[in-house]
Length: 363
Image (tube, rainbow, N blue to C red; front, side):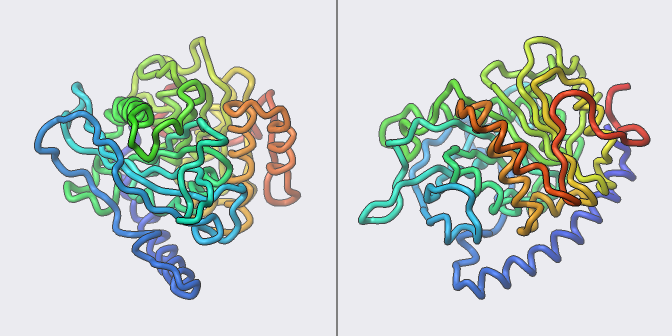
């Protein structure tokens, strides 16, 4: 695990960036005449559940068109949202505690507004894991892009990671999050099988992928590729500025393995490039490395602009190829991830050179 001083330094940097981002986002939404509370409302912290009941089936749905949800959607679908609550499984430090899960899904237009798209479904499922001290809502633009491109995206708020968590932040709880993630997959799949749920018939259980940023990338990688925590339902993973963690135990990349996309900012001082190169060089093919030239730790994933657009297009093409079975996905990924002076995509081989080592990673 990273040192406490490292985590504190990272939290301070993230908090400063988040304040600046939040102010800009609110201003943009107000100018656009949008309901700020609907799009970036207060983060949902983790609260004790009164009883460890089965997952709550989604009962409410809100929908927005891609144009409303984000300025430059990459897909053709409108986007709907719903939510469910799962519970931390036995064996974690907080069994029975509630974990809120926000869900974005592809929608079709109707006279009454956007409704869940069943004509093009069932759709691949992506489970997104947020970074430490960042809310799920910080990633709304990126998540909305994936949903507009035809993916159901579930985003849990893990214990003690959200800045508004009433129990406070505790990065050490990350060791329990792989089990939480596996429980979320199960509960979303179960909800999609229940008549009357907004997700009914929407999820293709044979096409499940993981994507995560920072600590969320660590968790996603563990569930996709570490013997400690692996879930065989997962068919592909994208790790956004993440790392291997010795704290999880187990062995990374023991067969069977899944396709992996590693995304890394070359100027990231939180999860340094050596973390991503360690992942990439250890992973077997098929593997892809998106090098974001001069990019830092958070902006490529939470700050709207050209770099986030590159990340959205490249990750979508990756999942199109590995989950949706689109033959054009690899070519689209190469085109999206190769931008002179901004991004470079490596296919197979080894990652771009990086100095130093990754704190907290296995030797």
